[in-house]
Amino acid sequence: MIKWNDLKIIAVEDGQPISSKIASNFNLGFQDTNKIKKHNKIIQTSDFTGVVFNDNAVLVSFPKHYIKLQEFNALPMDEKINHIKLIINTIISYRLNPHYSDYQNDSDINTSFAFQAFNEIYNYYRNYGLYNVKNKIFKKGYKGKIAWKKTISRSSKVISKENLLFLPFYIEDRNYTETFITDCMVFAINYTFSLYGQFLFLPKFSELAVRGTTCPLNGNYAAIVQKLYSIKPKVFKDIYKHLVDNLIQFYQGLNNDGTNAKDIKYYSYDGIWERAVEKYLNKYFSGIAKNNNGEDYLKFDGNRLAGEFKKYTIKHYDDAHLDHKLYPDHYYLDKNNNEQYIFDSKYYTKLDKLDTKQFVYHILLYKKASKTYNSLIMPTAGKTNTEVFLDLDKDYLLDKNKKIQIFLTHLNTQDVLKNFVK
Image (cartoon, rainbow, N blue to C red):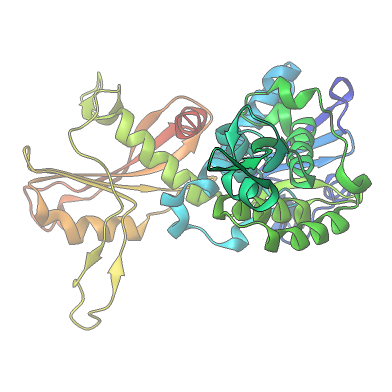
């Protein structure tokens, strides 16, 4: 278990250099790092976003342009943990949201923690409490609910005043018995809190805390899985079967070798950034405004537009290839004002060349509205700002009355991600 007072946090950034010593100490594999040639030297860089726990140290690989590492290293421990918590929960929120399933692949993530199974176990506990079995017990008596079938089959038959009596009566009593499944639930929740509790947005329950983290079958996770498999056929309700399935997945995901790192590593954070940007646009984007120099910029003040940005499909633009399609990330057509917005998320370290795809979007869609606003959207650790990325020379315009500009908008990464997990 992690000793929080002695916790050491090491921070790197997705796409930025990482030392071979750090890679070795946290057992980073070939998928976790990338090698690039720079100034005739081979530099190893982080190729994931997420967290790796190893003994009493934590390695966090932040998203691109999330925070300056020097600034992070100077923060007090509680603030560092809050930043790590945010990154973990962006990954969990994204992976558990069924609306985002079409954007994901199993290869996007590598984790020893079956958080999806844990989420189901935790939701069961939150909705129904601990698993228990309702047993019927029949006993002789005259107070309570009479179990007539048992009474008729077991009691003596007595005729009194021409009436047939059954003596004694059998009374139905019910009790609730905790089982091996209950113990598995308690350990799964308490173990997760003990290991990841500082990093997950979950309320604690004293009912479970007092029961500690005693593992069923003395921590033999393989034996636990085997026993849960043997129990499953004896469970009849679907909700209980679902619980057992998730317990099996949880214990299969546990690593019984304490020398190995426990981790949540995500290799396709661009997908999270895209969905987070869309949620941010739909809450805060209020249109195009002008600065003191009369230049256009994207305004985010919470006075949101009437409609919503959505992923858009451009099709039937190529008569030679009718099945070809293009997909701008965030599109909104304001029919009332005859204006359209074509935005595309870019999870890049830097962008210094013409994005030809974004330019093609503009050309293919410019007839749909009298005014087109086009912007690339990148993360930044600084303040949100907009700059002109492309201002097409008038000699190349399709329509002399329609100026073609592409903005580059830098959105503050922390603001976008905090909004994403709300």
